[in-house]
Amino acid sequence: MLETERHEKILQLLKEKNTVKIQELVELTSSSESTIRRDLTVLEKKEYLKRVHGGAAKLQGKLQEPTMNEKSSKNHHAKQKIAQYAVGLIEEGESIYLDAGSTIVEMIPYLPENIVVVTNGITHLPLLLERNIMTYLIGGFVKPSTNAIIGRDAIASLEHYRFDKCFMGVNGIHPQFGYTTPDQEEAAVKKLAMSLSREAYILADDSKFSEVAFAKIADIKTAKIITNDLDSDIKNQYAGKTDIKVVTA
Amino acid sequence: MLETERHEKILQLLKEKNTVKIQELVELTSSSESTIRRDLTVLEKKEYLKRVHGGAAKLQGKLQEPTMNEKSSKNHHAKQKIAQYAVGLIEEGESIYLDAGSTIVEMIPYLPENIVVVTNGITHLPLLLERNIMTYLIGGFVKPSTNAIIGRDAIASLEHYRFDKCFMGVNGIHPQFGYTTPDQEEAAVKKLAMSLSREAYILADDSKFSEVAFAKIADIKTAKIITNDLDSDIKNQYAGKTDIKVVTA
DNA sequence: TTCAAAACCATTCAAATTCAACCAAATTAA
DNA sequence: TTAATTTGGTTGAATTTGAATGGTTTTGAA
Image (tube, chains in turn brown, blue, green, orange):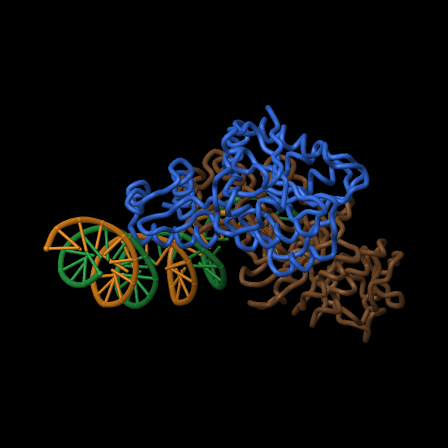
């Protein structure tokens, strides 16, 4: 049976039943337990369901309707790989700052449970709460276009916290001009969050390199970079300036 | 049986009955007493219910996400009327605090555009942004069960603002014991928000009167009350203590 | 009120179930 | 064909479960 065919049957049954046992799915699809387990792992990462001991459950904090089929763009896969590597850096019990933005959101399904997360990304909340992760939200002005929290109050709110690690998205990475982003106010929040962290990580796909946006966040050396397939000559531009971890897809 | 499946059954029964005995749940789910006890411990920690000797009781705070539909259908019209009246009190350019909770959310569709809103209710955000209303969010700990922001940081975050008017939901209104709510930390946030407002309004349907919950927010005289069809003898209990506006449905 | 029986509870332990990781066979793709 | 992916079985580890233990709370009768 085709992999996608099984996935559809699984999701179909889940839509009717709220929860399914692995044994049910083994019978329904006439495949082995191992295969079903693998399917569930995949489907969980794609946020179609939530695995529970003994089977899987519908995840209600999300839209589980049709529109999510085309998520599997090429870029998405790279982002996932980057996110997985980033999560691997996190240790139990740490306090973590998660920047708003679509790159960072990919980390959430992989996060360990017993950490403390602080974020300025409202859109991250449903996923974080679904994962039972202790979450603090920064206060301040809600920027409509990105649902990020910024401004004077966000700065003041951040001062309450200290982080073991922070994970940020940016719009530009440049050996001379550093990390940049279009919005002045978002830059200020990112900058402060980085300075409150023992270690700062930038998550960026290769399209961000050699780009420069309006507002400077910090110098290159301030953070380590996690990215995907990078030309070696680009990589050389940063030699000695900061660590770049290249995650191969 | 799947752990998740049991949890759902427990919550389902609790929704219908207000209290359940352990023995009932043992029969309902065909599992052992030990298992049910463990389930109740977990569900209590997630703030879905309150354990009592012999079983569990509905958490009066707000377990209203799943019950939203029934609740809405009956009280919805009254709540809407109350909300519309409340919005009528707001003038252009004012700064407004909106409490988290299902009563207050009804106000959002009627709000004028050129005001500033501050809220601790994450679930209000999509609606507010859709209305193009300038919105500030309080920072702090995200309480999983209600999506309200509470705690030390919420208090500190609130101190940044002053309000012309605030609109609050409560669980109990009592001539002697004042306004009350089950959660101590939520009460602290509500109390501070009220003290930062020139005028404070309590939105409450008639079921909240003569009720008393655990944590006191403030004395009756601290706020004006907006409600629906109220017995005149109940209304008389508050004569001279505060204004009550009765909105007829 | 006091006391003892009953009911209820948290904790512990061993059995059963479920799990991730691994490997080899089968299938598919190049 | 070979190489890559998918699959199913096996392993030991991790989780969940039910029963047993002993402590605590409630009940009800004196």
